[in-house]
Image 1 (spheres, one colour):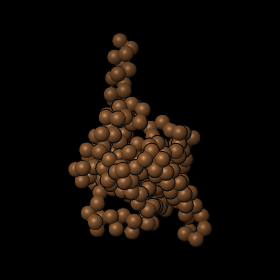
Image 2 (cartoon, helix red, strand yellow):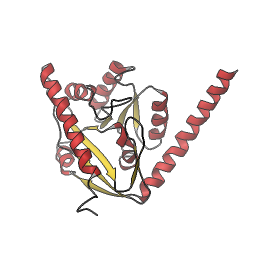
Image 3 (cartoon, rainbow, N blue to C red):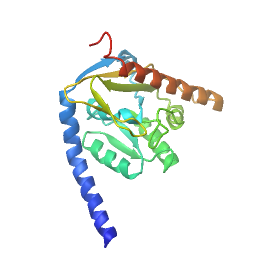
Image 4 (spheres, rainbow, N blue to C red):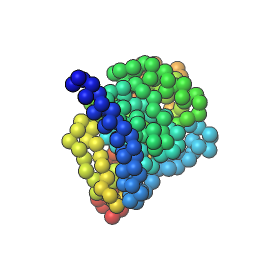
Length: 226
């Protein structure tokens, strides 16, 4: 009986989150004044009619659920319970979730993502998700880039006025009416023929770019951009 009650409670929470979550994100996003930096890195690829793999830290996903809504971006979401919440919320914001991660259902999910990239969709991956360690790139993103031939665009965001949760990913929540910034890095190409050492070098390159971009984003409003 208790298990059944817990199941009902979980289903109710999921139902509420899947409808209230997107509304709250949309209202919050509408209040933000978002500045984009580095868009030329994406424009070059769009002129070549290329789809991209967006790579961003797990803790920076909130602003992107608003800024990239309704673009049918395919996002790799874990099969954990918190992944179910995220999957339902982003579904109503116009994303497509592919379930799996580097820990559960990983190889199947990576195969699915490779198939999606062949369909011409952009892809979104949190290379430090779903459980960390935070700010460390796992190899899955590089593997998908190698298999698909799609360039990886490191992307991050921050806000002038923000909360950072004490979770492993330091999840960022912008305060309403804050200035925000989205930074896009230089594309990373992973050739189909790569040695394990070259793949590791690409992984490190992505990690370094994301760390540097995120530091820049967090400091963006502290000096000359007030």
